[in-house]
Image 1: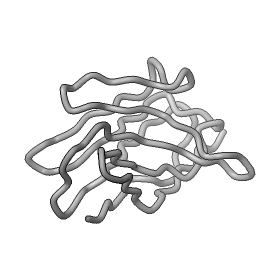
Image 2 (image 1 turned 60 degrees about the vertical axis):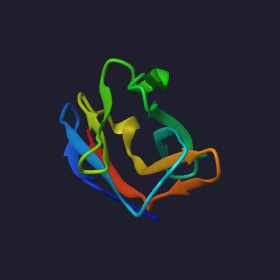
Image 3 (image 1 turned 180 degrees about the vertical axis):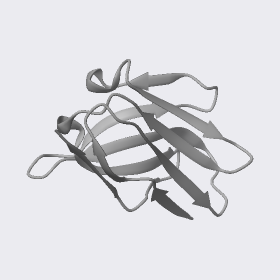
Image 4 (image 1 turned 90 degrees about the vertical axis):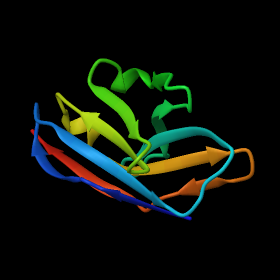
Length: 114
């Protein structure tokens, strides 16, 4: 099983980016699909999650600006990020939590300039 995150880049404050996390291989027993981020010098923090029935949850900094979704056919999880702010600058990681283990993708860097 591999998770491939993409979509990061440099954007001005107020701009938008859409991150993608493409999965390969068979993943069973999914509990949740999540996005985390880690800013320089800070601990990794949870950003958003979606569970198999479609219910979503967001950390407070993401509420009203970010949207997590999934495309079952493409086996991809997305994070649409709008109204980006310099404080959103971080490496963003996708995670799939199953009843058996937790899978992580490599980070994709998001840099928001003021």
